[in-house]
Length: 432
Image (cartoon, rainbow, N blue to C red; front, side, top):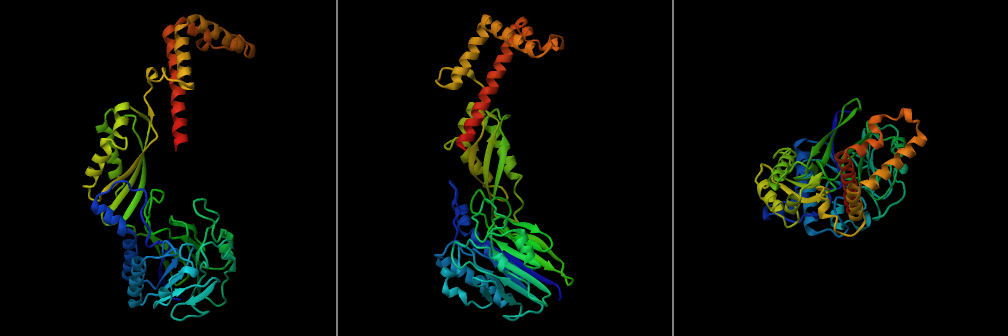
C-alpha cells in the first residue's frame, strides 16, 4: 500500500445559528451568519489543496432534519468541487441528519457514499473490496440511537488498512447525549486501524494505535464551544503508521478569559486589562476573521468600577468600539461578574438578614470589653482543659488579646471581612 492522505471532519452543522450574541456590528453580524458555510468551504478548499485521497464525514453535516435550501446548496457545491478533483466522500449520518430525514436530492450526489444503518464496507476506486484500503461505516437510521453500533464492526481478512467512520459517544462524555454509546475497548476490538468519529464537538485524539479521533465541530456556535475548531488531516505511511494534523477551519473563534479585577482602581484600568487579555488571544488574521470572548471577572471590585460593567455601563460599548479595530476584530460577548464588593460594613450593617446581624454582633463585641473579656477567658479555660498550660505558647494565649485593644479590634474586623467575603462568594455561586 502506498502513502495515503485524507481529511476527517464531522459536526459541520450547516444551517446552524450562532447563539448568545447580544450586540454586534453589521459587518460582524454578516460574518456570524456565514461562518458555518465559510468553514465548510475552507474544508473543501483544503482537501483540494492538500490533494487528499478522500474525505470522511462522521455525522451531523446538517444542523437539523429540516434542512434549509441554503444548507443543501452549500453541501452540493462542496461535493461537486470535490468530485471534479476526484476526491470521494464517505459519510456516516448522525442524530441531526439521520437516514430517515436525509434529503433524497442529496443521496445520489456523484462521489458521495452514505453508509446504511448497519456497518457497510466501501473501497477506494470501487464500491466493494476486501483488498487494499477499506472504509467501513454505519449511519443513524433515526435521530435517537441508543444501541452500541461499534460492536457491529469487524475487520475483513486480507485488508491492508481498515478505517471506521461513526457518529458515537465514547465512554459517556457528559456534555453530549449518550447516542450510539461505546467504549474504547469496543473500538479497539473491532480491528480497525483508524477510527474517524463524530458527535463530540471538541477535537481530540482518544488513542494512538489504533488511531481513534474526534474531529470536533468545524465552527463553534456558542460560548461553550471555545478554542480552535476544524478537521484532521490524517496521513498513513506505506508501513501502515498513521499520524494526524489538526487544521483550523472556523472563521470565528469563541474564547473565555478569567480576569482578576482587584487592582482596577478605576474603570479605565479595567478597560486596559480586558483589552490586553483579549488581544493576547488573537492567533492571527491568517487563521480567523473574528474572536468572540466571554469575560469572567473575579476578585474584589470597587463600587464605581462595578457600575461601569453593568449591561448598560460604558465599558461594554467602549470595548466593542476599540477591539473591533484590532487586526482581528474581537467581540466581547458578555461579562460574568464573579467579583465581590469591597469590605464596607457600614453599607451592609443597616440591612436585615444574617450578614447584617453578624456584623452588628462584631461591632458590639468590639465596643463591649466586658463581653470580650468573658469570651476570651471562656476560650482559655476550654483550651486549658485540652492542653497542658505549659505547652501553650504565651504569644497565642487568648488573654494576651485583652492587653491590646487595637489588636483585638483588628482580629474581629478581619473575621468579619472573611465571613462577608465567603458570603458573597457563595451568593455568586448560587446565581451561577
